[in-house]
Image (tube, rainbow, N blue to C red; front, side):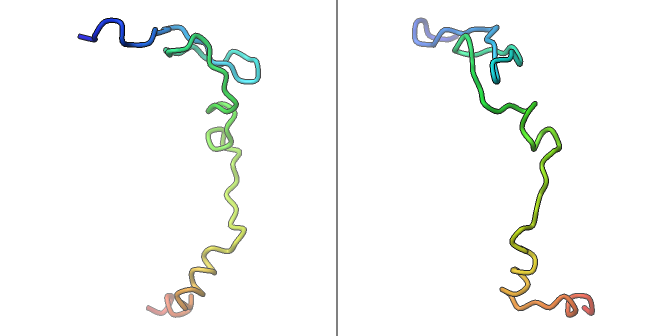
Length: 75
């Protein structure tokens, strides 16, 4: 059982806003939450994120450990 008078007030119907639009209702210790990013507009969750290998990570790894792709194919 929870101790009395030590916990913050719980708002079961707290509203979440993003860019001034009501997004969802959740439980929180604040009656309103204003967020910049949520899963509905984040590129990772919406599928619009593009993963780019701008630094050539595979090539850099191969050079660093002096691995040759032809050696790996013959093994």
